[in-house]
Image 1: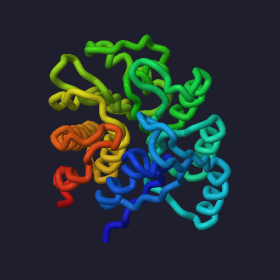
Image 2: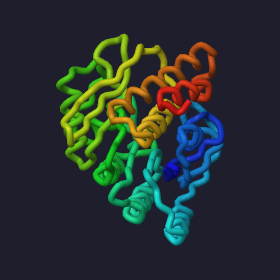
Image 3: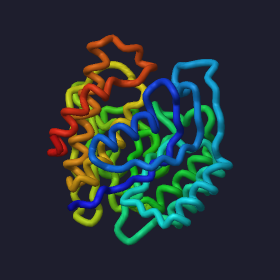
Length: 283
């Protein structure tokens, strides 16, 4: 019997507005993978477009949780990190990597810190440098174009992009340390949007693109990253995994647009899980 794979997901919890752990947990679990969660904070809603939200920082709980899991000799097939709210959390996650890294598990870092050409308001250039150091310890990173520019020192361009620019970014990102890079928000024209991948050991660069849907939708990065990881752990190649994640995310955006859902509420990924499972050959 095949052993159930296990992921440690290190993200915040937003009680309303689908993102972070409320996205990662159902997607990873539906893909037949056990999800263990290490929450970094609890919010009443995410911070994109909502006001008056509550925020409880869980930094002080992260080290004791890590120590307890270590005492139980828990092992993880992957470690998946997303939004981290402080330098202290960057350091705690680095220690988590040191504690639970093995010769054959996967560390995936989504360097959540910026979009649309600028850092999120709570972050500074110094934090971006700290995130770069965390990415150096990853096996795979999943930045958007803004984050990629910050991590590499390349100038940010709003797009459309050239193949040379995307290739240069991918290789500079891999030079930080991760052998696998997935760059999101890639487009070469106004009709398609998706991701580009670089597998350093093979040297392969590929793109997975779908028809572009107008508008900005919250939480799509977490939907994409969770589906990407689920596909990788189900045995798909890096490019196959990115293509599956792009299709899944695009389908969720289509459902959301058709339903007229308030974009602050996140995308209707739940209705697309059957498609994801078919792509993963699980149903």
